[in-house]
Length: 175
Image (tube, rainbow, N blue to C red):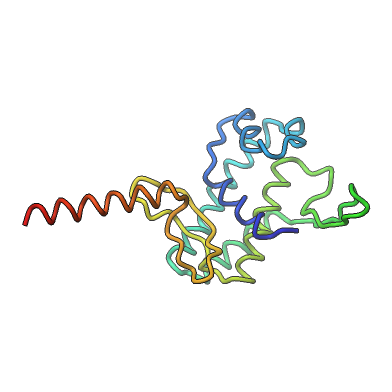
C-alpha cells in the first residue's frame, strides 16, 4: 500500500465536488476500472464522509494533535477497514484496503482512513492543512521535509505571492 498516495487521495476527496455519480466518475478518472461499480449510494456516503474527514484536516491545521487522533480513531471505528492481499498480479502481491466486494465508497473511505492514519503515525499529526490563499478552502497533505507547505497548489501559491507583491508595491507608492 502506498499510504502517502492514499493520504493525498483523501485530500483530493475532501476537495472534490461530488453532486452525482458522473462527478464521482470524473473524480475517479485515473481509476476507470471503478467507474462501472459506482452507484447512487456511493455519492451520498462520500458526501457525508467528506465533511467528517475535513475535520481531521482542520484540527491538524491548528496543531490540535489530540483532536486529529481522536477524530481519525472515531472514523476508523465507524468505518472498519479490512485490508486484503491482492493477487490480481501474482508477481506483484500487495495490500488493498478493501476486498473486491466493497463498494466504491467503502474503498475510497478505507484508502483515506488508512492513508491518513499511517501518515499521522509516520510523519506526525500536523502534516495536514488548509490552503492559506484567502479565496481557497481546499485541504492538502504536507510531505515536505521541513513541513513548510501552506498552499494546496502551485496556482494558489502564485496567486498569494502576486497579491502580496501588489500590496507591497501599492504601499510603497503610497508613501
